[in-house]
Amino acid sequence: MTFKDGIKQIEKANEQLVDVENGVSETIINVFMFTWQWWLGIGLFIIPWIVWFLLRNKQSTGRLLIGGFITIILSLMIDLVALSSGLWSYPMVFSPIGPLLFLPYHFSLAPVAIMFTLQIKPKANPLLKGAIFAAIGAFIGMNFFELIDFYNPKGWSTIYDFFIYLFLFLIAYWFSNIDSFKRISDGY
Image (cartoon, rainbow, N blue to C red; front, side, top):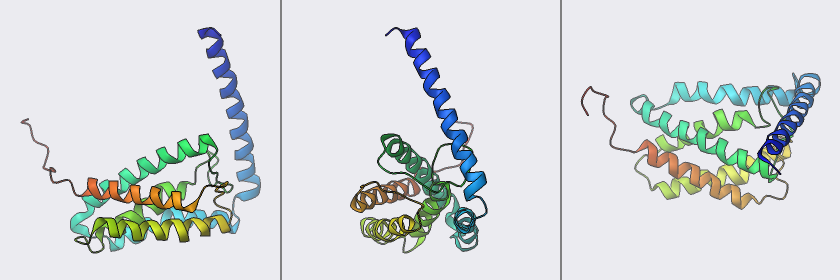
């Protein structure tokens, strides 16, 4: 296959992806939108941020947000790899725009849960806190989302989710505890 043939093949695959996305958008708009599941997903997207904004440790807002943003980035990366590999899927999709991600999880539930966990007993052992967080997220959260058809593990073991949650928490913990934060100044 030549380079030009490869470009043509990629363009053909992109056209197929657009057709798939159009089918997903049609399903969301004509079937899912305004169902109780859709409203639950919208609530899971908005309410955690409102609760966090009201109950956060205001002196640590910046550090907590760094942990939350790192969680968003890493969870999206992990999810894109897993989805493209067919390891799991999200049968219930909330937005007709973009990939088939469970957006309330990536942009709200995971980062806000980690930020709350970071601020609770900040001097406690991070591995213990991370393990408790991971156990709740994997064994309760993921099973609940599977039960209401928001998540299809396709044989993916919940124990793997535990280690993903533990990884996300520990990385967020590390970033939120970096001591080198100072105001940006003119000098290097």
